[in-house]
Image 1 (cartoon, rainbow, N blue to C red):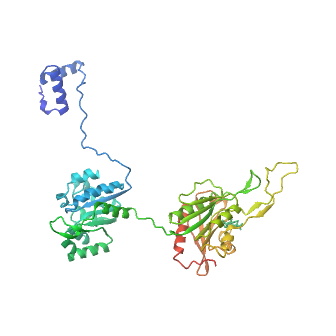
Image 2 (cartoon, helix red, strand yellow):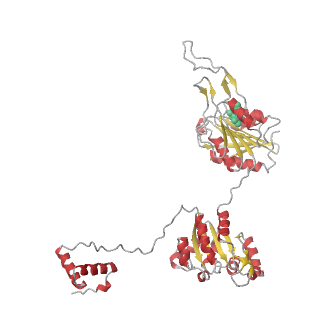
Length: 479
Ligand code: CTP
């Protein structure tokens, strides 16, 4: 018969047996015999209150807190006394919603432990170029590329020399040689090392190669009695520098410019309940207003009745009719740039009914139409407050370019954005647009045809052209 060694049982089974045998005043060996007999006879005692504890999980899982990361950094920690600051740096980066994966050089492990780094980063720590766990699929390449930025802190004199000379004999240098991401170095070393001709050469080379340096600062060294330039920047300074590289400030090419835009249809009343309108949704004009605002301009949007939310940061004047639109446009002057994207009704009813028109036996009431003011032409022909750049739209259903060119001349504006609004294109009310930018260039009429784009893309492209025109003098104003 087989004999059973209690010692070889799992801990929780042993505990169960000990408690159960004590309760029943039997030896553990005797208790095992009873359990086996009960099992065979089908009447085993319920396990409670001695239920087995839950099996321990293989590794404790760290709780991730806070919002989802928005960027990721590979942080290479070099071997220097300043390595302790990199522990704070991990925290500072994570506060900024940056995911941090850390690599420790061999020397770094003399100053900070992989355990501390892993506990703070909530990630495994990488130390070895030939680690079979991460290198089975070229892990150093992933660490080099699956991130938005590489930060080296502290960047020791030795590590900087290796990067400057393209060495790749350990995990840190191999990552730095294999990366196509921006690299931020936070040097830390003794002032004599920092000022050494070899380090000076390496710094120049690294900057030429496009690496960015933060610090070092000047101050006391870890070595007693030594001071000078060589202290690693504080964690918060490095985190700020990393953030600037990860989220570069959005350029504001229209900062300081005042942009006036018209958008949407106009409604021309027939009587208190009826009006003449068109199919314009206002989407293109609203998109231009949002793009100009994002480019830093002060934007005034004069809009006819539309079903759109006011763009953020834009002053919106809501109007109904063409005459109200003209009034608001004139009130908004002066402006640096005026863009007339509205589909203004060409005519209004001369004899607008004060009461609702009724059906009578006399038949349909005659609607007498009169021409509306042409807002674009009026503003283009101003002598005093004419904006330096006036842009009109040409909504055409045939002979697009020819009609747009003659509109440019007739209205006296500087550029025309021509678009085909025939029903088949789906432009009116739709989300996409195919446009041609018509302008005067070196004395000639130039036509730039853009591919099909969303109305937002058209807006961004137009704003980019406007920003460029401030520096490109080949586009001539009409006057
Ligand atoms: N426009 C305007 N005021 C008007 C009519 C048009 O400001 N009363 C502007 C539009 O905002 C657009 C340009 O003039 O920037 C051309 O508009 P469009 O409707 O294409 O042309 P029309 O002037 O109506 O000319 P046509 O009837 O020949 O198409």
